[in-house]
Image (tube, rainbow, N blue to C red):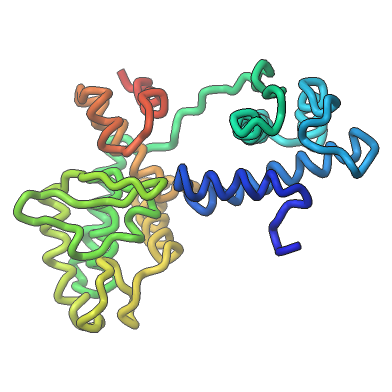
Amino acid sequence: MTRGSSPRPEVDDFLRHLADERQLAENTLKAYRRDLHELESFLAEYLGRRGWHWADPDVDRLALRAFMGACARRGLSKRSVARKLTSARTFFSFLHLEERIPSNPGRTIRAPKLERRLPGHLTRTDADAVFEYAEGRAEDNTLAGTRTLVIMELLYGSGLRLSELHGLDIDDLDRATKQMRVMGKGSKERIVPVTEATLVAVRRYEPRRGEVVDADESALLVNPRGGRLSRRSIQTPVRACLEHAAGARGLSTHALRHTFATHLMEAGADLLAVTELLGHVSLSSTQIYTHTS
């Protein structure tokens, strides 16, 4: 059996379906795999036999509720238990559509009620202080300083995810139209606006970038050796700016994306427009930002 594979081939078939048909990100696939392997281990113990299969009548609603209870007793949060239930439901739905099981045992199970958490974000005053600090670093005219300002402007000015920023190539930026091509979750491409402040920051950074890159390097953000900047090397200066300027310990790159959305909503932006800018699949993902109005 290959590493990461399931003793029951249905799980591997399901994961291939998610990768090929739905084109989910690798981290999402890993989460599904982990959740379903935990479910397999639980069912083997719960049913008391190794020769069970997914169409077994005992793999039912009660078995899934018992799995949720076992997860809760292990100290998992309601959010984690709800995610594992979602993984199981989606898997059983796939098996049902494939006519491998007679029905989806998870269809009628209620997920744990979750508290609606507001994402961490900066006030306008704190955001001003953060960018004043980042501007100060850029004035040193070093690769690190000018690059940090570009990072901050793109995260806040365009609402990018860390993965989207990490994957940006310099040719993705269209200066004439002040737009940028971004590859989001599930390899879904979208076009986002680029602020004038971002363009100014990029112009200041480009000479320093040009000193270290080879002609064939496409990445917008590069390290001193001329290669694509790592995600960790993006996160570190962002955290430093947040902590030095706003005392916002614990906030990460994602806080700037949340701040982007929050400030748009405060300014009266349309919810549908914010959903499109963030690359959310549904309005429900964006509605959390309506706490601002």
